[in-house]
Length: 82
Image 1 (cartoon, rainbow, N blue to C red):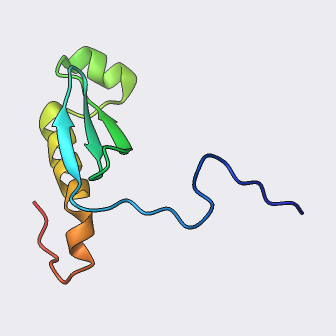
Image 2: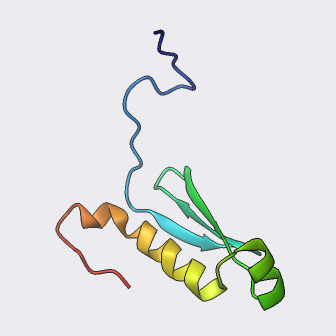
């Protein structure tokens, strides 16, 4: 089996802290210190559309994004999440 290298990273990837959560029109984006996107979390406020698309509410998406953004600190002994 042959392993391929993609992009400019040849070693293990790192996502330096701090991570931030930014709100956009229909999603939250969590990024690392280097502005690398780590995750998109989509939401919908209209109940009919949210149900049809299985999306989170804005409040649920915000809470999830903030908890993910706290993740680097969890490795340093803090276990408190919202």
